[in-house]
Length: 113
Image (cartoon, rainbow, N blue to C red; front, top):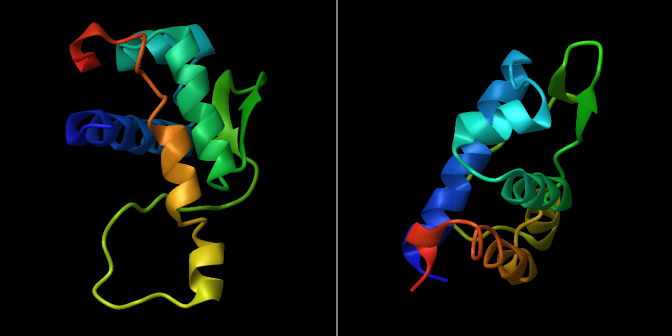
């Protein structure tokens, strides 16, 4: 995975997180359009977010994705080593990166080699 693909995926997750917290995503199709991705790509990103621990679900009353409990999305580097428990709590680790490499690989022509 190139740095550009990873960066785009993280940026999508950050934008989705912001809109979810505002309860302003709209329908899945509206959110995909707003993010300039296909609906399939949106669902892959949402699936990765869920695998990383995001309690995200669609609320038909609010017509928006919402978090079922209070959470914060944070993607950054740490200056010190995390304990095994801290890694577990943040769902960190290499195995999650493999899932990220498949997002938008086929739906966004600008990401293809």
